[in-house]
Structure formats: structure tokens, C-alpha cells
Length: 134
Image 1 (cartoon, rainbow, N blue to C red):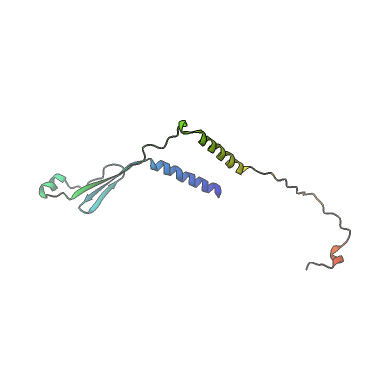
Image 2 (cartoon, helix red, strand yellow):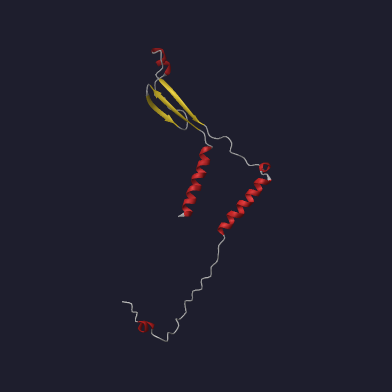
């Protein structure tokens, strides 16, 4: 169960990093107050009304396009060796040693004898002390 949760969390974090670097555009075409088309990949299809004919007959155009641009990260944080000063080296060394000591396996010898026969009892202790299991 622990392995499964670790795999799921690492997969989710990988997708989080992947999708935080993507940028995409959502285009919407409205005709009047009604949403006619939404496009995530390219231009949204218009409603079929020619804008020139509508512009000649009416002063105000009823169609409008909305473009929402969602921008992702351009750069991820880069690591350079110049930033790795001796204090950070000491911290990393202490962290690695303390973390690796958590997983030291202790070997315990189980001395179970499968072919061990019980000792011979010279006296019948149940009859001697009058203790019987019912």
C-alpha cells in the first residue's frame, strides 16, 4: 500500500511540473449574448454572419471574440554549483547520514527448532497439583 501511494504521489508531482510549464489559449466566440464556439487549439469558428454585412446594416456589431491566454513558466529554477557553499554541503551530508541510518536492517536470529522434541516429564503435574483443563 505504501509503494502504491508513493507511486501515485510522484506521478501527480510529475504532472504538476509538466502542466505548470505549459501555456495555452482559450478562444470563445459570442454571437450576441450566446456562446457559439470554444476552441482550445486554434481559432474559434464564427457564427456564419458576415461582419461586413452586419456592420453596414447596424451600427453596433453583435459578434465578439474573447481570447484568454494562460501563460506557464518560462524557466524552471536552475541549480548551479556556485550556490552550493560549505554550509549547504554540511547540511546535505548530515541529512543523508541521518536518513540512511533510518533504514538499517537489524538481523535477528530466530532460533526455532522444528525437530525439537519436548523433554520427558517424570511426574504427572496435573494429577499432582489437581489442575485439569476442562
